[in-house]
Length: 120
Image 1 (cartoon, helix red, strand yellow):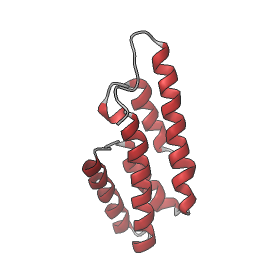
Image 2: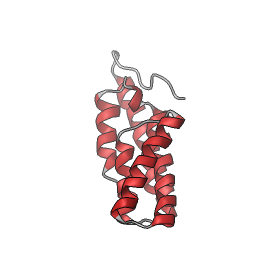
Image 3: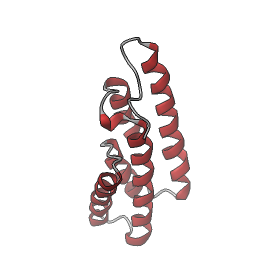
């Protein structure tokens, strides 16, 4: 999933960022995928529905304190590819978990880095 490239920049490049913490990576991606799948089912994939999906994604992440900028692209991926509900598990949840696990291992190998700063 393309948004994982931007997630990788955050979790490996600026692991201290609040936007790179596990709650934001996993929560943001999963909540946005769920929200976008619901919008896709209700409104279809017209261009205006894509706008609704992205704006709803931002609102949901702000409300739940899981803001993760690459998740905005997750909304577009859902709307453009029209996946089934399995998308929530693979690639969204599993991919997010694998990236966070890799970031924990990689960032904590260096003495001057610790990741995450917080889990929740």
